[in-house]
Length: 382
Image (cartoon, rainbow, N blue to C red; front, side, top):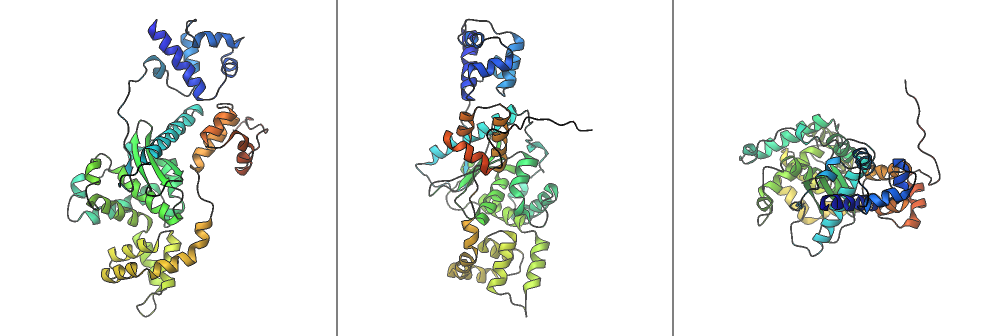
């Protein structure tokens, strides 16, 4: 029957997508020979309910995925950090979505429930965001989120980990072509943020916080409103949120006070504060302006002159040379665990982490694992 053939074809596709052989899956099902599974995949043998349930578990899919295959859905959209048209955007988008799907598959294969706490996020009123006093409202929301997520007084230090672990945002770092600096999306695979791994650490932190604002206000503004000609008010609000989120008011005031001498603060004083909070000097200047700690004209003049930026580059060269992030630590951890627990093959691990098959032993050692080590041992906990 057509329905049975479609199910058989889908089962074969799911197995091959995970890089598993007929024998590997047959062994997990307890079949005496792999030909039984081969017959099921070719449509020559009926599939029993318990077999389909076990196959769904092995492939990390809900059983309804096989019983009621989803129709083609509208393609998800990315809210790009830089909306200017770029010929490579589509290629980056496909790669990003591909990793997001793999991320979700790894969670299912390992039996880990997706956090996806979008519904528990703080309510953001669209009407408040459209008011003239919206900057104050957004800064207050940033403070509320700092408390909710318990990010402490230096949020940059643990921001990525908290967004992944507590809210379930899939964060992926990729080396992006010039003109593409990342973005965010909400789709079937949940909330996700794409960050350019080539950017400096402090830029990556700001982009994370900026995109987090777009995710928590995703339903408020259509993409075309955010992308309207020129820098939209919504983008400005995202910057205000990121600034207040990464540089808590009380802490910034305290650090500035410590470095003031006779009502003045030096170049090095400002740079040290920016480094302490792991933000750019430009972001710090605008935060000081918003807190009425610096005259706006002075900040604009200094940013235009570029002196502080030059000094920042000289003192932060070592930070830029630090090993760039790759995918995300959680994603890589999930992929390695799935491999060592036999959920995916070595070839599939290579595909999941974007490495050559021959590079996997070195890749595992770099992350503290050995290919031939047994990590399946379990311990009783009382």
